Image 1 (cartoon, one colour):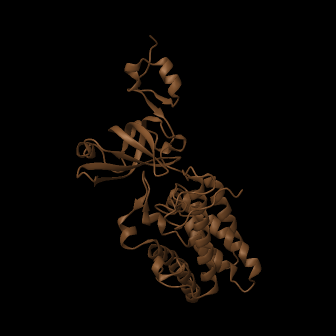
Image 2: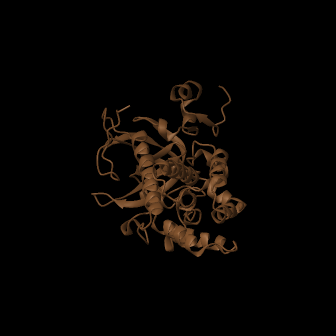
Image 3: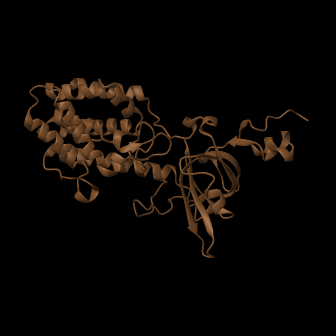
Length: 345
C-alpha cells in the first residue's frame, strides 16, 4: 500500500482519491474545494470559515443548526439536523471548521447537509484562502488616488488629503478595509476600490457641469467613506465594531476630517463646512442613515455617484453569484426585489 499522509490538504478530485486511497482512509483526508466550484451532489470533506451560525426550531419541534460558510470564492448555506445542540457547543461564529456532508439543491440554491463538523485551530489554515479580496492591485489604486490629489489646486484641500495619505496607520487600515459588511464591495480592499471608482465617476461628470467645484467634489469623493476603517472589523468575517454600531462611519469620518483640519493653519471655515456637509449627506436620505440631505451641487453629485457605484457592484455580484438553473433569469433577488435578467451579453 502507498504511504499516504491522511492530514494532507489535497486538491479535490474524487476519482483520484478513490484510486489512491483505501476506503478506510478517505474519511480522514480533507480537500481544498472552493465554494464557487461546489456542485449539487458533491461529497464535502473540507475546511471553511464560519460567517454565521444559529440554532433554529424545525416543524417537528427539534432543534437544527443553520450555518453560513465562506472562503475567498464565495459563500454557502448549510444545515445540520442531527445532534444540533451538541455540535452548537463545538464551534462559534468566525471559527474555522472541518465539515463532512453532501451538497443538495434547496429552492434553487446550493446547500450543504452537514453530517459531521469539528473546529480547526486558526494556525492550521492560511486565512487568505478564506477572505475575498479586490481583484485590483492595492498599490496601483493608492497610486491613482495620489495622482488625483496631485491635480487638486486648492492648497487647503491638498494639504488635508496629504495628511491622510501620509498617515501610515490610516493607509494600512484603508488598504484592507471592506466597503461594507455585505452587499457592495464587501471584500478586503473593497473600501479602497469603491473610493477610487467613486472618485473616477465624479471626475468624469465634471466635464459636463462647469459650475461644479471640482476640487471640493473630488476631495469629498476620496474622503466620503473613511470612517469605515473604524466602523467595520475584518480580521476574519466582516462585522461592526462597537464604535461603528454606536456612532457610524458618517459621524466617524466627519470627526477624522475635523481632527486633520485642526492641524492646518488658516483652513477656511466655509470650505470646512461644505466638505463636512458632503460627508454628512452622502447617503442622500434620512431613511438611508444620512444625517443631512444634499443641499449643494457637489453633495448631490457625490450622493448619486456613490449610490450608482454601490448598486452596479451589487447587481454584478448578483449575476455572477446566481445559482438559479433558469437559463436567462436569476433567482428572486431580495435586495432588488425582482428577478434579474442575466443573459444580455
